[in-house]
Length: 268
View 1: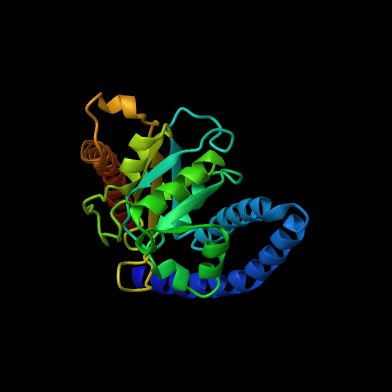
View 2 (view 1 turned 30 degrees about the vertical axis):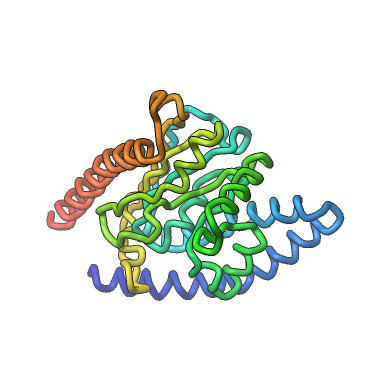
């Protein structure tokens, strides 16, 4: 039965993904350009960023009911789209992580900091470029910092995956420091974003999807003052990583309990 579920999930998801992408991306591109034509580059980029979130919301629902989502907003902020900007710090288990950022509300304008490979993807790389996504490997830190500061001044939030590359499992790699240097130089709050359950959606090195429940939890915002007067990038990244790791332990335990309950129910 499980093998049939996996086969169905992969066939149905990828067929729907190709169909939706073939229809939605051209329509979305034409719509964004038409709406923005008379309002300048700044509006064009904002609309592309919002369109990417909408596209992500559609794609992440294509696996239902074999892939489901639970979003927990523990920031204490009722409307993230009206606040900000923020620095979202996410763990990185799977290539699906950038799509899962779509749990954030539309009009929560943001860009992602990514490695080179997303820019090489057909169509999606074009969108990432138009949306002003940042290739952290293609620029010195000084330029990276200046570009980030400009985005934050425009009230654009930035999403970081400070592990740099996906872990492929439930463990976390060490964090790089760029996001935390930026955090200490400004006054933009960090919001930790914990993603659990998608390590097999797909598993690293494959396109194979497994059924499951993805849990995403936003933690309360953090400011430099929360880390004391002697705060430095190493101290902050170590503390934030420990917070995320602790929350992931809780989320992963919820996933294991749910899996055990499902197996028990199936055996009855």
